[in-house]
Image 1 (spheres, rainbow, N blue to C red):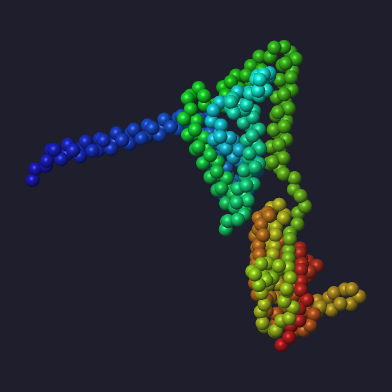
Image 2 (cartoon, rainbow, N blue to C red):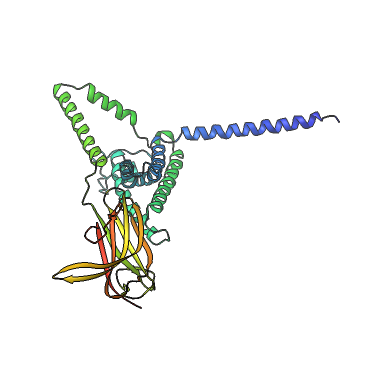
Length: 361
């Protein structure tokens, strides 16, 4: 059976057409990336960097998270929003604003756009306004005000407004688009630092450099080595009410021997480092003489091993079923850092809490 040369030619033409189409779209994509405004491309890259730093397992607990998180919350959302509202280049207000002698009206901001200083100031102000509004909206959603929902919401807001800003700038003529004058700033800084007019300017430049280095070093040290506050661990007992809420009330005090009742023990780590805990639940029969409490009989009920990062909380729901009978028994919770000693008493525990209960047969 002979092959049809016409069919092969048509198939080859289709392949060439598909290849040319892919090449055209690729070139358009590369041209679009190349034409992206540098400041808006930096904003999008900074959003992706912040998401990576906040979510990466080995980086999220380091000071880098604070360094990128502060501008992400305080500056970037407002800058992207302002870029979408004002895509055109602005001019600084003139020293002597022209006034219409008949109407008495000065030059309006909308007639000249906004310049770089106004853009930066409005970016901080709008960020402080936008981020709390996003948190307010999240508060009425099932996700609530938590790290991941806030990160996703703020990132989505910034990326959407950045895309709108890019499209609006592309609609303007090239000479009317806003651009950050990086080269002008660099040339001016180089001239001021390395080509001073006289010795006084040179001395002031050196003093300025020393001040900037000292300020950056101080901020970097404060971020990298934060001052730790008081180190402690919160330790408490809770119960669950009829609405499913955790409350510090309604504790069980009457037990039947071998019968279990539910309690919730809470541990919150405020030690400024990851800490391993051992939690013991015991029943004590005690005798009190002259304000001295002595344990005459003891039984162990439960043991929990916990490992919590700083500012992490563990609510451990569990059941207790004491078998030691009597009145005014002490249901005791003992918390130890790492392994407990051979003799476990409230005096040897790092934290202790208890309930007075009655156990009947």
